[in-house]
Length: 115
Length: 109
Image (cartoon, rainbow over all chains, first blue to last red; front, side, top):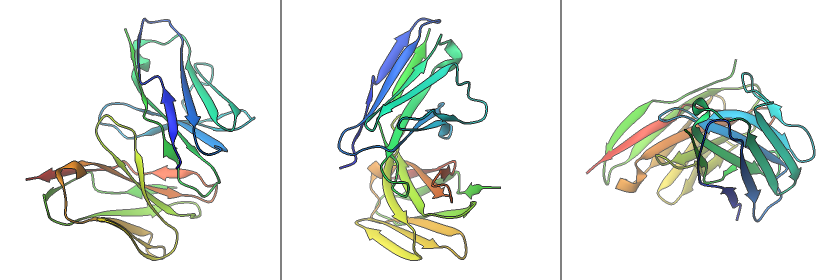
């Protein structure tokens, strides 16, 4: 149980393109979903937390106009990187949990490369 | 402030036992989590402790002492595939996970 699917796994695109990443909880209802970014050999960095039906809460330093998060249902959240630039290249990982006290379960991540 | 401390890197031998320690200071406490992350992959959930004591799950065990703000992950009969980073995370009073930087475990034959 507790399977989270993230799509796509890899994205390579030109600078200035907007990229949408989907995160789905397949066998449970995700009250809360999280978006992380991880640069090579560095720690997980939480970007934002989203609860179904409400606006995402962004961590300090994360531009909400650049990283658009939508959590329209209990099984789907999307992250759109708008007008992506090479410095946005990173490993983006979503996670989801059901009840507040439950562990987060991670998707497989999306490797984003902006040329 | 909130803080999670764990060693940056550890080395162990295949077949041996290794203990990865974690100390935490968070605003409130709703449990301690351990995750495994292989290089280039997303983390996977290993264990959750909310009460003091040892939780055993196969070759992996996790221990918690709330009074000391301390946990450890114990890995027995180490295999080469156990080479990974091990992330300690404490859940605070708002049910938010505070992550440690991870311990990179290197297994040598």
